[in-house]
Each structure stands twice: as structure tokens, then as C-alpha cells.
Length: 371
Ligand code: CP3
Image (cartoon, rainbow, N blue to C red; front, side, top):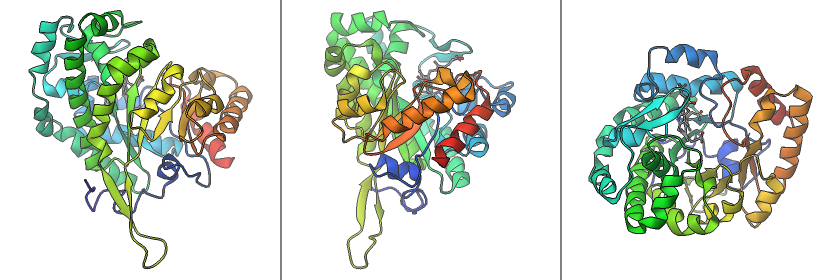
């Protein structure tokens, strides 16, 4: 399906930005940079706005969510905004009892542990999201109107990461109940994964239709899985989730007069934590770009991806608090290794730690742009 004429990609605002160029596999003038969790607790202006607003309430107030998304773009001069929301927002909007507990993460009213719990959950109709995502759609519209030529990245949680929260009932270390369930009750597991793919896929599609220029799927906990379990019990649902955005396209005018307009699809990034063994499989589900955490150097990641896939990453967040010369040497190394891939978007190997000095992030952006 073609994006609407006022979408920033279709309107010609973001299609030739550094980010979208690099996501398309071409190296722009300088390496683009943005940070996972750039919006959030490292910024005093964020902490101030959040006073009196529970996390999920903040996500559903369009003006607030939009302003929080814009804060790090203004402050750091990054090459993209990442939409301020959370992976559990579509679960909440479809009717799941979930809250985000500060310092902990998403916590469910009731863990989904058995086949009958799953039946009860999947009885919630994902199509209600078409109306209950209005605050998200409104927040995206407000944000892209302000961002102009800077692309907004929409995102969603991958089915495994969301299922891990649902089955465990909250954050857990090795997601043992979820991994037991996928083997002990493979049919119930696949019903759960199909449902989650539908819910999270609709969340992602709504953001792109409303104005996001790229989409990132976060599989934060897939690193707990063997390659075999990933391919068999998880990848099909992640592919299903991405199908919700894979058909979205935009057109650019030809450079030479008389030539045909070119149709492009909206770029999709797939990121996981501790997923060095899964990189190829994560690309194969229908991603254009693979996000790499800090454990695998980018030259090795690119080799595992056959040398043909744009990569995103992978500054170790721990080094943001090291003295500048140590961080600078590390960033130079990341850039040099990233040169092995067709193109590279600099990011962190996971999110910005809350205690990070924001001035370091601004300096890092300036440094990357000056190379
Ligand atoms: O700049 C951005 O990246 C902002 C948008 C964003 C948030 N969550 C806001 C948020 C994104 C992309 C996410 C994704 C998300 N949420 C993931 C995938 C990425 C990752 O980090 O692995 C996961 C696993 C979640 C679930 C979640 N939500 C956790 C683990 C937490 C942290 C809980 C805590 O307090 O330590 C949250 C809450 C959350 N989501 C915060 C933010 C800014 C912090 C809430 C606060 O400020 O009180």
C-alpha cells in the first residue's frame, strides 16, 4: 500500500535524509547517529515532564509523548527521533492488565501460564486497536509536523519479548516459563505468538501510516534462545508482525527526466540483545537493517550477514560513563568496523543508561558527524 501524499517519505521530506539513505544501503555524507532510549531518564527536561504522569499514561497523552520524543532531537542533534512509547502500549490498549513499575519494567496483573490462560488472552480482539491507538496516531502526527526533514522511527516489541513478559508476568532473567511453554505446549505457544504478532504488528503499522519514516522491531530477550528454538518457535511470528508494515511503500521522482518514478518500501530494522548467534535469522524474517548489540563487533556481524546488510550499532553503553578519550577510541573502532558493511547507522549496543551525562551524548553526535 502506498503511503499518503502528506507522509514525510512520500512528500519528499525524509527520503534523502542520512538515516533513510543509510537504511537503504547507501553511505550518506556522514554516518547518521541516534540512540536507543535517547528519550528518557538521562534528560532532566524529561524527568521534569514526567512528574505526576505514570509511564503508560504519558505514552497516551499525545502532546506529552510528542514533546518527549522531540527533546533529545533538539538537544543532541541526532539524525532521527525514536517515538516515545513502550512495547506494552498495544497490550494495554487491547485490554491486557499491564503497568510499568518504575525501576522494574512491565508487570502483568496475571501471568499467562497455561493453554486456558492463552485461550482467554487471545479472545481479546486485536481489531479494537484500530480505534484505541488514536492517541498514538495523534502523537506521531504532532511529532512529524515538528521534525520536518528529520525522520521519526516507529517501533514495536517483537512477539517473543512481549510473550516473555506475558508468560512470566513481569521482567525475568532467563524467561524460563516462556521457554518451557514453547516446548511443552507448542500449539498453545503458537496461538499466543500469532496473537501477539497481530497486536504488535498493528501498533507498528499505525505509527508508519501516521508519519514514521522507518520501523524498528525490538526483540530484547531473544538472546535467551538457541538458534533452533528461535527459527522454529519465534521467527515465524516475528515475520508475521513485520508483514504488517512490509507492504508500505513510497515513490520518489526519477533523477533523469522521462525516467520512471521509483517505488521504495519503508525500511525495517530488527534489533535484539545478546543475539549474535541469531543475526542471520533475524535478517531473514524480512528486515532491511540489523541492529547489533555491543557483544559482537560490527565487522564480524557484517560477515555473519553475508556482507550485504546495512548494520546499526553498537557503542557499548557502559563506555558513556568512561573518560572521553576512552569513549572516543571505542567510537572510532566502531566506525572503522562498521565500514565493512554496505552502510552503518551509529547507535548504542542497547539503550542509554539513565545515569548518562547528556552532554556526553551531544559530544558523541558532534564527533560522529565530524568524521
Ligand atoms: O528513546 C526511546 O527509546 C524511547 C522509547 C522507548 C521506551 N521503551 C520508553 C521507556 C522504547 C523504544 C522502549 C522499548 C522497550 N520497552 C523495550 C525494548 C527496548 C529495550 O530497551 O530492550 C523494552 C524491553 C521495554 C519494556 C520496559 N519499559 C522496560 C524494561 C522499562 C524500564 C523500567 C525501569 O524503570 O527501569 C520500561 C519503561 C520505560 N520505557 C521507560 C522509558 C523512557 C522508563 C520509564 C520512566 O521514565 O519512568
